[in-house]
Image 1 (cartoon, rainbow, N blue to C red):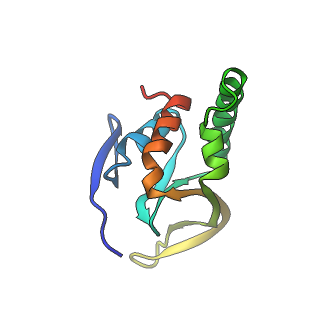
Image 2 (image 1 turned 90 degrees about the vertical axis):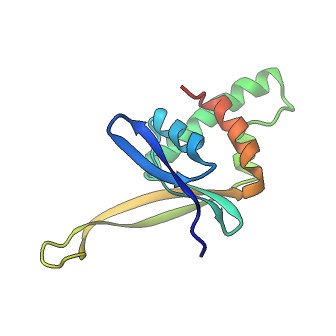
Length: 143
């Protein structure tokens, strides 16, 4: 797989992350709204992939999109909302595994903890990223 050009995004004064170029504003905005993402990518299988680090983050995102949908559809029933986009143009995948910790007995080794981690991956065609951003920023206005 080709390396994607990444840029550094400052989330706050002492926390920076690398993200694929083109997703900086999306990822920074999710963190601003206290919705954590991880492993996000443009051009994952010809798609944009946004992974929510915890199921609760995904749930919070959906609830905000749903509230916006109710508000917008009350005034403009035919207008597309982020909720519509998520229902029709996106796919969702559960990504689950076990929480890992560093193995104190092996350099570069890890140990499973027995704690289940459930992430949610949102995937949509990469050519729809502009549409997604427009709808996202309506629901989660940038700071």
